[in-house]
Length: 168
Image 1: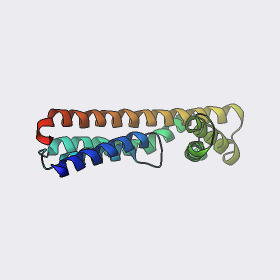
Image 2: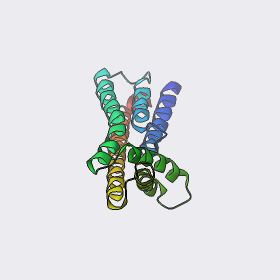
Image 3: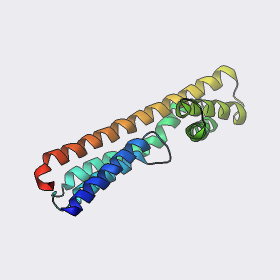
Image 4: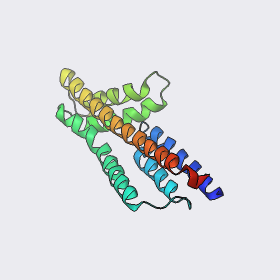
């Protein structure tokens, strides 16, 4: 009984950390949420569902990989370079810690713009377009992770509610 409560609590904490991590780049959001599902199923009262864990794990790995690919695709589709993609990441980190409103949104855009203009010597409209593409890629990737982590939270809650009598 005590281990069940511990697994539920730790699993839920990992779910919340996963949601936070879907927005913050330093925390692997989707894998943390998936780990929360694994912890839930490690509860002695809940029978292990290997198919469920495998399918959600494959999805988590795919999203984790796509998270690194999508911003670069956005940058490239809009004419950007590697410097713009790196600038997006650096701008995101700075935006998280900068005391400005919406820093997590403004940072990637400005980082890509600076990356294109300073390191790739891209000027004016082309640099702005590349920065916009990088920003769109970042937003798409973040949205994908956020949706996945909320779905994992929903699956977590469903499993707890569906098996409530086994836990309590």
